[in-house]
Length: 109
Image (cartoon, rainbow, N blue to C red):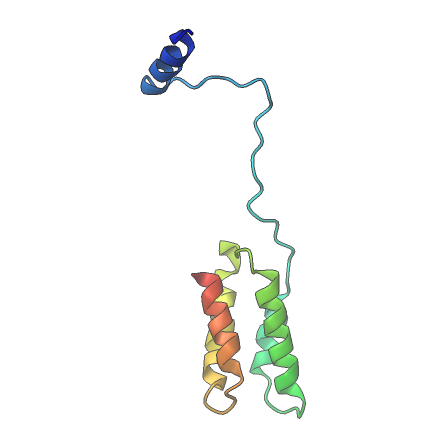
């Protein structure tokens, strides 16, 4: 039984040497973001004069949360916070927006 390969591996690890593997290195894809029209959601949340508007707004925000469930790009962060603020402003009169605001906060965590 030989300990030479084990010693060589331990020495290589201590010295910071990385052994090259024969297989090609694979880089994981963190997330591929499909574009979502956040300006449309902002405009929809700013509207107040329609009857069935609350349901449309909640549905669109839920779709946003699903789209960004694996993370959100930094370029969309300002618009996401604007949507969060609009949802938070609606909570007092429309308590159903609590869950949507909470879901957006979880995305930012």
